Length: 133
Image (cartoon, rainbow, N blue to C red; front, top):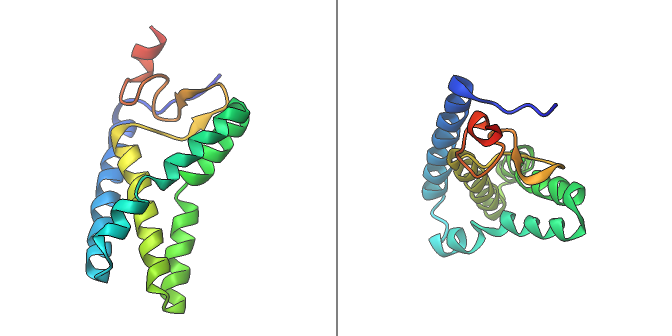
């Protein structure tokens, strides 16, 4: 049986995502990097949806890789360590995208279908109980 986070834990995860979005955008603003770069790259992680052309299992894997916080965190930390501010900027943009999606209720995908996530079982924001009714 698939598990979906509901109730207070779901609310807390979305609040956490909102704070992560604010922190990522604030850090980006302090870098002084172009906002055009931010606008250009913000939706790039959503191109991973193309993986669904190869089926739901591949689609979920590609989507989850591009929407898992680990990769942009490592990218940002590596950029800070190496003094590569463009790398830091890309990591912050990526993290902001993930946080924005999670804030709206889009979670990591299960192979059962695009709309089956750890945060909901249907459209973004629809609680699992409503989706299963």
